[in-house]
Image (cartoon, rainbow, N blue to C red; front, side):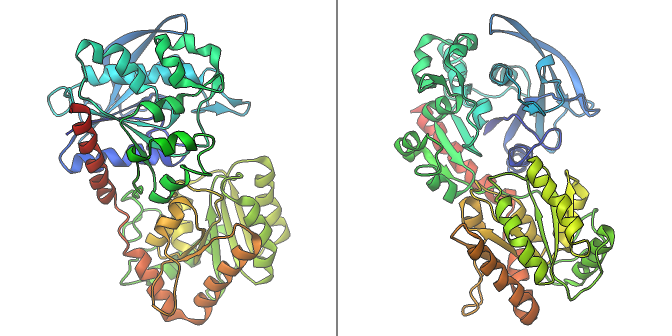
Length: 487
């Protein structure tokens, strides 16, 4: 099967969240299963492992011809882990941020990502993968609003001329909170026929995500629960469309990258696994020492790694922090976001210098050490399409306390002492009392029932969150859409 994954982010070259992780990991898993896979993403920076191809193309949009050039990963332009990673280069991508800066989102993001869509389809016609060009039934896997115009451009510039006539488009839905909506007068700049306006129109504004939802051959949300939620209250205004397309909407849970492996993690103080957890105690002491916290094994270390914003429930974390401090816990928070929440991290260190550590920003190595060294992980997201940190924490023997929403509900099974099942604690009512109660159960189990705690750790660490599992489910979606497109 030939697959072209198009995304605004591609880890490790560009990433702000889960989209970059998926775009980086899923193609490798598909290639490992024998498929020919290309990724296409913007070239935000000129990394040393990207080779110029000499291929250029021009696309007429927004009142002029816009040129792009292409680079590929690997100094010799060959596949990396079986995947050909293609990067689209244009000055519009050379800015301080991916989507915006300290002043907000870039005003020309519609142009930037429409250009990516045009350039990505062209790349699929030009670059061979494993020695040959992608076929006429190539699956285009678009992601979020940034690449949701791929069906429109395929239908306008390629299929009428016999190219990619049997190619389905699968649209990945990672977060419906971002839809790319702009003024309707920007439609003329897209260089699409007028018949596409009703597909893009949402209350007289141009909504790229709506167009993708209406015109893609299949829609894949990043967890089964999120696929259900977005058909009702979690649809951000698109729920009726998603309900109408319910027969083409499925949920596939993301996997986690193999680099998150406590038995072979280059960032942590000691290795450990489900059969031998002794290294986790070493990692806890090392984390406390690194952060300047008292190195007490009998004091529980709770942790959160998150974007500091409304979605992630940081206000709820702030609300329970005084109670955690009064309970004698240590709390470590890593993240960046709203100035108000960043100040909470600074204030916490000042108010509770022996118990609280806040790191404003992001540090990949520290994130691994926090997951390895913490006892309990906190993830009170208001909504969470999939989430990765709860899976990282289970892999690292750090049982999570989560709000039962989206992918959190799909991945964390609440502990039931009576049946000896569960991998963490999930609270359903989004309020302080419910969060504190769930944390309380976790603390009680950690302190008073060490044998049960080890079993909870073992169950979480041995749960299959591999990308191979997810890739198998995507294969089935791709195959169905190919049959539908060919029929």
